[in-house]
Amino acid sequence: MFFNRKAAEEKPEDILMDTEVYACMDEGCNGWMRKDFASNDLKCPLCGNETSMEVRELPKIN
Image 1 (cartoon, one colour):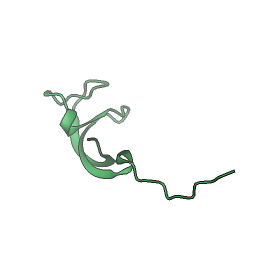
Image 2 (cartoon, helix red, strand yellow):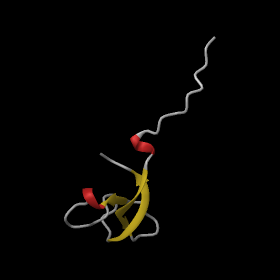
Image 3 (cartoon, helix red, strand yellow):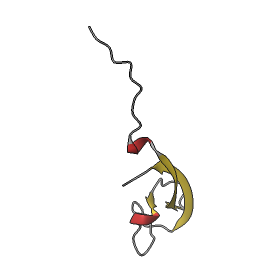
């Protein structure tokens, strides 16, 4: 039996970055979207309410 004790490589999805997002302002909704993928009207993609800008630590997207 062989075991590989090599250190695990860091994958791109493991790299976290501060990312600007628009988050739903309704306390009962968890909707949010990255600024790069936000719709023009900046409404919550789940409930349609207003959103506000936040910064979250998210995996990097290429």
